[in-house]
Amino acid sequence: MTTIRALPATFGSDLVHGVGAILLYGIVGLLLMFAGFYAIDWTTPGKLSALVHRGLPNAVIVTASGLLSMAFIIVVAIFNSASDLTAGLITALIYGLLGIIVQVIAVRLLEWATRIDVGKTIEQEKFQPVSVVVAAAHVALGLVVAVAIS
Image 1 (tube, rainbow, N blue to C red):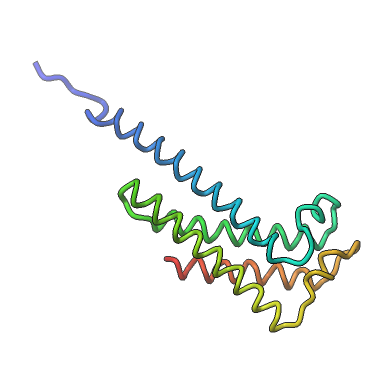
Image 2: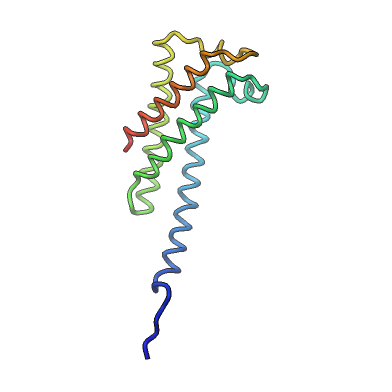
C-alpha cells in the first residue's frame, strides 16, 4: 500500500526555518531602522524627535522622508543578502549600516550644495515648500543608495 502525502516530508522543518528567518530579518530590519532614525536625527540640526512631537510640519515631512529612504536601503540590503541565514543576516546588517552612512553623507552634501538651511526649515511653525525639496532629496538618494547595494 502506498501512502500519499499532501505535504513534503520536510514541510515542518522548512516552515520553522522560514518563520525563524522572518523573525531574525525583522529584528535586523528594526535595528537598522533605529540606526537610520538616529543617524538622521544626529546629523540634522535640531532634535527631530522633539520637533516631530511638537507637530512642526516641516520636521514631520523631513523625518518621514528620511525614514522612508532608510527603509528602501534596508529592504534592498535584506533582499540582496546571502541565501545562507547566518551569512544573510550579517550581509544585511553590514550593507544596511553602510547604506545608512552613505545616505546620511549624501543628503548632507546635497543640502550643502543647494544651500538649504534644514535646521531653520524644520523649526518653522508653518509649512515651508523647501521641506518638500529636502524630502525629495532624502527619497531620491535613498533609492540611489538602495540600487547601489543591489
